[in-house]
Length: 182
Picture 1 (tube, rainbow, N blue to C red):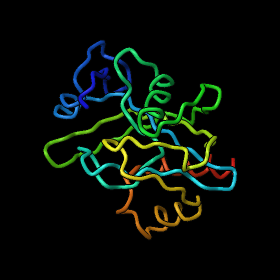
Picture 2 (picture 1 turned 120 degrees about the vertical axis):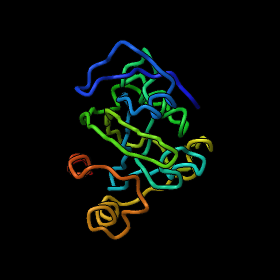
Picture 3 (picture 1 turned 90 degrees about the horizontal axis):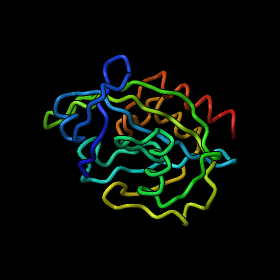
């Protein structure tokens, strides 16, 4: 879906302009996004396999929920909306914990330049996996994986090509925060 998003400058400030997501990706304009990591008290992390039709990283495992913040939307509003749109889960603000903001830049086939400011959140998964409903345009599959397995596959380099790449600082922050909660 080609959404209208805010365009930001390289220092992470809104420019006051908007564009279609496709235009932002064509020109490499910075824009805000959300990431949500859902976990269980037993040390499981919910991952989504991106749909095969996605423009960026199709078929790779990724965070529980990821998406663009729409024009006029706050990061909190964006994460709540995207969570419902992608996996059919309604969360409340009080269930979310803001982890931080990270910068990301990736160049993709077809000339896509994806430059993001990612607002990252954590939340405990409040329902069993079987109660989630995926949007097939966004998500091919959901799976709970142990935090240990995830760390081994990403940091231990056992299977990094199966995952959407993020920086070492990003993963360190996420894994440290998740480990302290399970």
